[in-house]
Amino acid sequence: MEKEREDFLKKTALEIRKDVVRTIGVANAAHLASSLSIVEILVYLYWEVMRFNPQKPYWKERDRFVFSKGHACPALYAVLARLGFFDREELWSYRRLGAMLQGHPEYRRTPGIDAPSGSLGMGLGISVGMALSLRLRRLTSRVFCLLGDGEFQEGAVWESVMNANHYKLDNLIAIVDVNGYQMEGKTESINNLEPLQDKLESFGWKAYQCDGHDLKELERAFKAVFACKGAPCAILARTIPGKGLKKIEEGVLSPTEPMSRLLMEEALRELEELDRTYFREGEEQGG
Image (tube, one colour):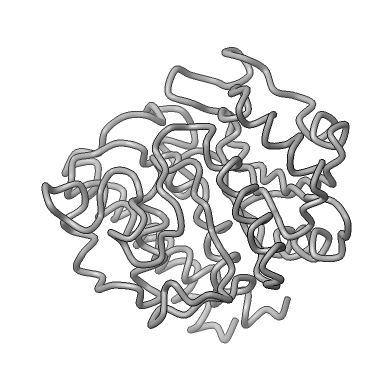
């Protein structure tokens, strides 16, 4: 990846983070940490990988995206708004009665949403069905499913893992946000999933690990899965809850704490400072 392109994607990710903070803060909602942990994954996926058309959101030959960890939808909404699926102003009515953008994505209600989510553990099963349907219709579209690591505590996920291998769905790519947290606390203390890569591979999948905040590592991981034939593939993206906000990263604030107006303003100042020091000073220095 060329540095100019990498800087563009990093800048885009920072702007997405700002919109995520505003969206959640205005609504006085929660799930900030899980939304921020997936920003680079979504940015790389939508700007570098997927085929879609914001003017024709249900274009038959598009790639499909199933957002299994739907509670982190502010990140996806911010991405879709920036790409032109709907007006950015819609973000500020998040979770309001009758608004386009609700607390979990709704198919057909929101342009760019390919499947509903909310009940954890269901997204991979939906993705298996989509991938099989695309194959039967001889379409070259791919299905990308983004799951939280805690979802692998659900038996339905492992049934879907087994079925995907049975049908050799190499048009299905699962991306796992391995941020190590769920609502009740650390995933490893609630029901340890490791070694997740070995478990997936024992089911016939090809699985690759990467730093989910490093765009070059994401690029390498996606190149690896695209070279994979005859088997479903997974990317285990190791991430940090609340990435970009030190108080959450360092454990001062709980990853599940709702976002007050005060916290929103503090978070935006921190992100603006990061913008100023990393990007604007770099431009002044010719970097």
